[in-house]
Length: 105
Image (cartoon, rainbow, N blue to C red; front, side):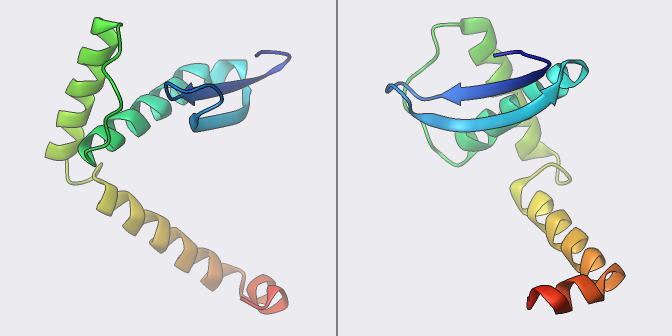
């Protein structure tokens, strides 16, 4: 769906089975958003989640290659990404203590 902003959905094999959604993307950010969804697929593959193979063999091959790269690159692994998110949250709390104090968290 594109009406000035774009919504990208990654569906499972059942009707309305959303696996991942990225909303409110400006048109110029579509390539990056598609790359993020491909990263999601590769991460799911690395976690052992498989429903069925895609009939699009070139896309399936690209996702498998991306999954292999994610496993090899310590900076792109799930644990590294979670660590980066935790570090960013710590920095936000340090930079804006008044916001977090007011929010009660």
